[in-house]
Amino acid sequence: MIGDKLQQVRARIVTACTACGRDPASVRLLAVSKTFPAEAVREARSAGQIAFGENYVQEGVAKIEALSDLRGGLEWHCIGPLQSNKTRPVAAHFDWVHSIDRLKIAERLAEQRPAELPPLQVCLQVNVDSGANKSGVTPEEALPLARAVAALPRLRLRGLMAIPEPAPDFEAQRAVFLRAAAVLGELRGAGLDVDTLSLGMSADLEAAIAAGSTMVRIGTAIFGSR
Ligand SMILES: *Cc1c(COP(=O)(O)O)cnc(C)c1O
Image (tube, rainbow, N blue to C red; front, side):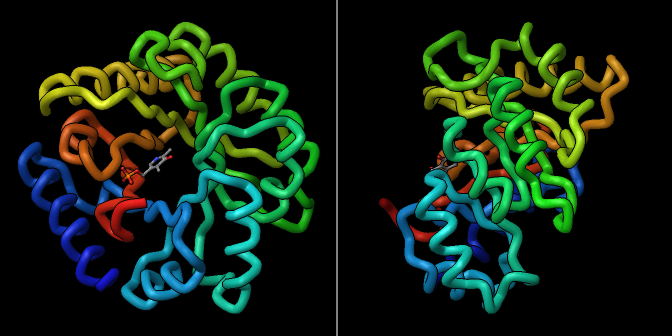
């Protein structure tokens, strides 16, 4: 069941890439398993899925621990808003964080990342639809924050994540995603070595891919509605 859904989502990614002349291998699929049990993650892993996203720290850590027998075969991404009193378990258990929106959070993650683990891969969350969604830095704030985060030890700045409000149609969705792509271009232009645009969910992955997404975060279309 989850295996069939995964195949359908992979097919959507291929179709979307073909439609805009992109290589399907340039888009990673992040399966968002929030609210679903560890056994659903195990089933998706059996169907070949490696990267999983969680929003809530406690729930994510419990699942990571429940699946510790698969540890080497799974990659865990923290995609939810992060409070500074929750950074320690994130630094200890996750591989990626997509939702950095202030320097203090990044500094705590850098300080708390265990020395024996590889650097934590991080994206800044950028708010590209003018305050409709309160999380994330403004496009103007992204470059100074990116410079500061890139200079921290134990973290590796990979790029940007955005979660725009639902837009009515493909063109409107794409226009908003393109603003995030433009901010990534600005970081690159400033000499930062960034390669990741975490854009697109179940309802708008095609528009995200058309705008240059390199990682789509898909929950409902894989695991069902929450
Ligand atoms: C829940 C969530 C998703 C997945 O959304 P779906 O619409 O279920 O695909 C993606 N990104 C973030 C940040 C989320 O919180």
